Length: 279
Image 1 (spheres, rainbow, N blue to C red):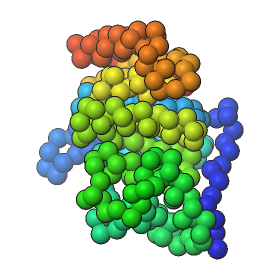
Image 2 (image 1 turned 60 degrees about the vertical axis):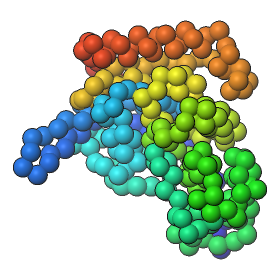
Image 3 (image 1 turned 30 degrees about the horizontal axis):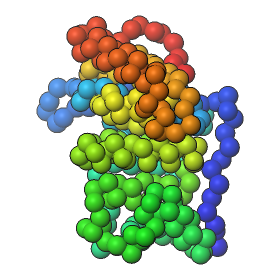
Image 4 (image 1 turned 90 degrees about the horizontal axis):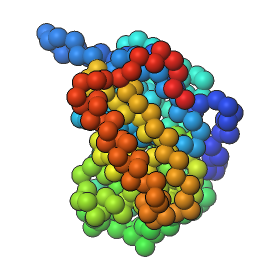
């Protein structure tokens, strides 16, 4: 019998995941080569909320899939806790744009799915699932079917499922993109508070500047294809809560700064030739 795991405690001086000179190209059968990413070097620090921000088609999702081990780089290397990523790992969970809940299973059964797939047993796993549902406000809906939930509630259930095996790294691919503005704002608040309570390392993809500043401790702006790191902004807002964060005097300053970065990149000024590691 195995109980819920405890995430490894990595060396705080080391990155959780890193890209070193990474490029990725795709070729359709009989078609030209499309270069999605070029010369991306980036370190993701333990416990940070890193946002990949940029226009559609700039390679944000491709980079996230490389971090998840779902793709292999054409050039360069991706490392997870110093080890070369060669495939998916239970230590890195991916949350997709769609919740992808199994419609014939209850909320609790969907959250328990990773445990069942790995053959784990024990009441402690059920208690962990219930505690995650409590954390996200879904405990009272544990016996509901996905069709009985709102879009935001389904996405919260998907986040619980991703956290079930206590992975140190959470990768999120525009998880709130399909939600209405009011629900999206509420989900931003809930995710930020969940991150503060769990201390997870999160890499979050979005093309929404406001969402990036609401959530990120660091925002990486990607240039249009081929995607490169155009700028990196530290969001140094020391606030005790999500509400205090978005009400802070610094909040609109970061919005304006990132808007200027996006405008510069969209006008074709592109990524700077840094030639070094961005950590």
